[in-house]
Amino acid sequence: MEYCPECGGETVYDPKIKMYTCKSCGLTLTYMEIVEARRRNLPVDEGEERRQKRKEYLKWWLSKK
Image 1 (tube, rainbow, N blue to C red):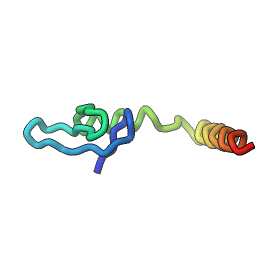
Image 2 (cartoon, rainbow, N blue to C red):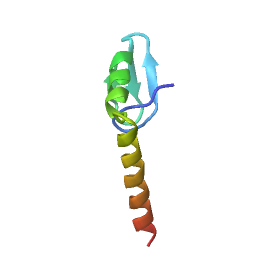
Image 3 (tube, rainbow, N blue to C red):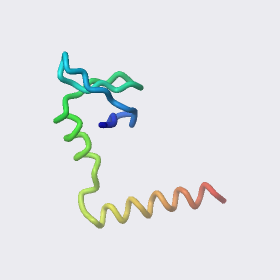
Image 4 (cartoon, helix red, strand yellow):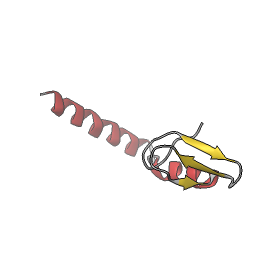
């Protein structure tokens, strides 16, 4: 099952139009568009991934205080 790159909602494949449609927001994408969107959202390297995790942790930590 694929997930919407915009809202994270569940998508359903429609064989008539050969595309995935999001149940939440209605976005319609081909499989390759979903793959490209997922690739764009991935961190570029390990350093970037580490910075992102630190940023998320700091946000979580400050919200608990």
